[in-house]
Length: 590
Image (tube, rainbow, N blue to C red; front, side, top):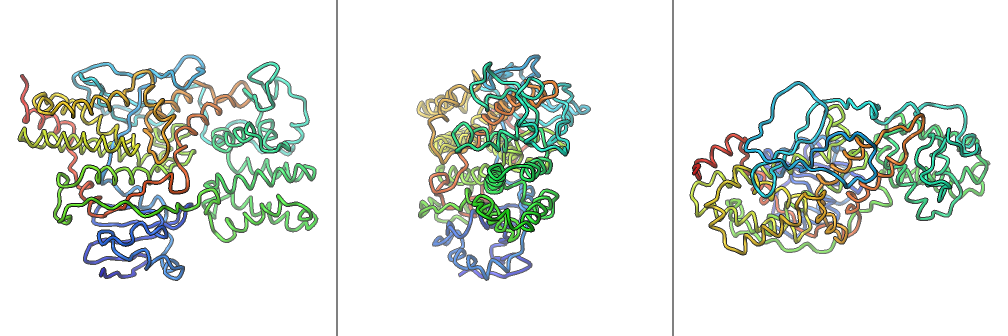
């Protein structure tokens, strides 16, 4: 019963003021709803997440999942729309970490600045080195916000251009030349003497590191960890173009077995870490096409080479045909969504009319959509914390923005409720939402609510909190205990170790770890790449991104309702001064 119009690559719903556009994704075609200022992101409509629900435009998925309909929709940039949204969630919490004096061995010994103060204002000063500031107030938890300051890292030991170092230089010699040289301190250092394995690397030349990828192993667990460590972290010490040149050199100079290994590693790169190849018109794709063309011109290379032929088939699928759907990132085939718990008149409903669990569902689903898009390269070189590198971290930056917005909206709604009885009801509602977020394992927005309730403008409302029943105080106390920042979030780390997906982890903890690794370890060890630093970095990234995955087990099985998103998006956000002033109007100073 919904009329739709096709216009310029968009499906329009005139009576609802909603526009549906297509965008290209690794995991398949995804679509976005646009209204006046709110964007509703849905996952692959082929999964029929919106079908059979009148509040989600009944029959929409059946209409547009045919290949004929999808061809009519124009391709849209992924980030073109993602960064336009300013509508609904909030804040990233992280500790203030002072630059360490010496190299550190554990990414978890992080000092959190929890010093108390009654007021802390953000100063408009000249640019300073980027870092994370923790704003603390007199309460059992600090109110914390992330402020991005400065533009350049002035640390001498880490003075490095992202994605390239002095070791990132073209070389006429093959990696095999360096590989066949004996392991000596001038080209490789090991963690232990004698080394426990060939992967027990502390620091090494770039060719020594790459040559380890190309040895004829049967994919042992140790090799797989090494392989993933390289592909997750290499952009901090060599550019993708130069890495590909190293592989092509290895192919040209290698024997048959070595050529096979090069093809196997290139196939792994194309399928598992294919975001380097997403833009068709870039230098990396041109280099890869030239390499493939040179192989195809030599027919003998194709004889009895299963890895080469498989690599060429993957190349044909991903580069030539323009399909970037990784075989490791298939679309989730989820079952029927849980039924929505909506008020009778959803069109006129307010935030306070919505069921707490339904609010938590929509927040969790939206958080997960952003979290699942985060790529490892977004978390390297503190890109999210440096204005000049912000374009490299669109998804983690969006998650930070949503976190901040939701936390601010929570504070604003509480302090803008003048009547004590009504204000107590608002606080109860947010505690219930926090409890539901915990059940859904959404630690990100759970922390946003806890931070809002510890905000100085809210925490000072003694009469409001005295009006809560004991069960609400118990719930809030238990949640704060799990999420407390003491001992580098020791309790939360233990919880996450045994937490199954779906889950949205709290990014602030891992960003603190990455800052610790980045500032506490030099990029270079003399003339050699500090590979130990990359191992530490990979360990943090692997823990943070391990809840990304395919299949129903990794995704929330909730139904997305546009009106609910719009209600959450419409929550007012006051400035810090306005929040505190309204708090004083609610309850004056003693």
